[in-house]
Image (cartoon, rainbow, N blue to C red; front, side, top):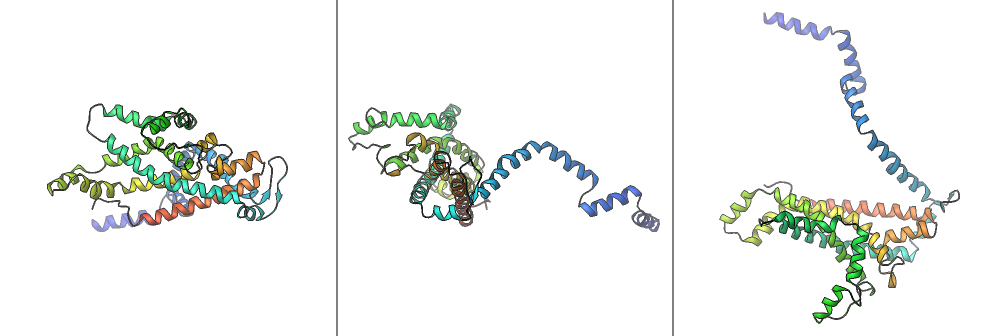
Length: 325
């Protein structure tokens, strides 16, 4: 009887039906069955709005700017091919280097400080106190306000004559500082302004804190660990994936800082202290009608962003922990 079953199985494999034979050849030719191809088609249909948006509004402009970065193009007349001329001009442009320095200076300050502020806010949001939901909403609120509105409020607070911050600063006996008019302090003032949006990152940090097993803290408490030891040896290592995410996101946002600087000092301010990279790019594209040169600047910024992100990812292998063991 066992032999009969074996014969039946061999016969079924050796002599398949026509439909099975066709599906077998389709699977060999395309790597999927008819049912899998149908499911793929339905999936593509559902994501087609995103695909259209990706190709029309992202991929095509990206490739188009790469093409015109090798041309002299004003946006009104036909582009004229000049090869690497825009890139050669860029590295001889003093304002390019000034704007790049300002942007890197701002990013190197704003991003690490933003991580610390987000962590502190997340720890505050995670405290078992009454009406904690209200506190979380108040800490998150500045991050959902329009950037231009927050910037105008910030300008009013730092007004050198009658701003609230200026008055409080003076009442403490501290020296008078024109935060938005002195080139020495303008970028620092902008770094402080960026921290008003830390509530958004704080929510992500809060989710990371909620994911840490409470048993780890209980075991550390039994071993006699204090608050600082528990934070440094448990919280920080297990929060490193979230910290890495915030660093990469902050790096991208910091290198593209524009709105705040444009509102405070559209001309770059005294000594071009707020002449950031994207502001210089904007001026060349829309004020001076040098689209080709601006496109070349955009691609250089893209390359800088990718390189810095890769460096951070490689560096993260030394300190990011993805497991509790």
